[in-house]
Image (tube, rainbow, N blue to C red):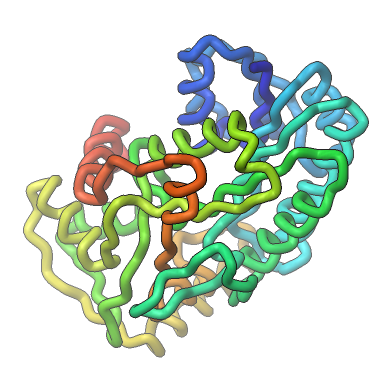
Length: 323
């Protein structure tokens, strides 16, 4: 295949890039100017400087491409409009450009956040309606509507929950707390989480690019087991050989700290690890989803357990000198 990956220098995009190049595919990467592309060092692919909000650069990147893995997205921003400009309208730009260029299939990276939190006793399934509770989830839901509603384009969607594994930056803050001997516990728990290793998500993305049955469908992508934030930290401490003491936060205290962090971000332009979006995620009763549809329709079976994936993350952080 000749493919384009938007967001190729991100956590998931770089893992997918390495896999595709290793299999002998011709890979083009759309990389935003000024962004950190070090994750692609040593990967034999073609880089195109551009942004999904810039139709001209998207047009250059899509020329001659058969499949587009649209992974680029904004995860943090101080206002709602920024999420929609990148995640929703950026998706529209990619879809429209693909149609003009004759590209055949889009594999869209969706998110469990588009459906919203689940109940502790019931995992989300694909027939559940969109019910996002924050701006990021709203924009990802709109991105799905735009992509799946584009006539003349083969579109399929992967909706992973929290992704872990080597290269993950989203969960780094919790490992750094553990390294300092601290373990965060939020009142009102435990709160079940579906997690998935990055390599298992890559396997699903490859199936979505190849299988006819995937067209027009969305698929959740949970790993083989569930965990909690507290268990992630406990496993991290075990892998790192650290003894921790527990810091207990009430939901109200966490929300207050997140509001302060958002205020700081608006004033300085610096995005802190804590924000209202993360606080809402941490306080939700559960974030779980079922992978049965992907198993039944595509034969996708995630193989990397949470414990193994968390150990892989911790080892990578140490190797990078991040802990």
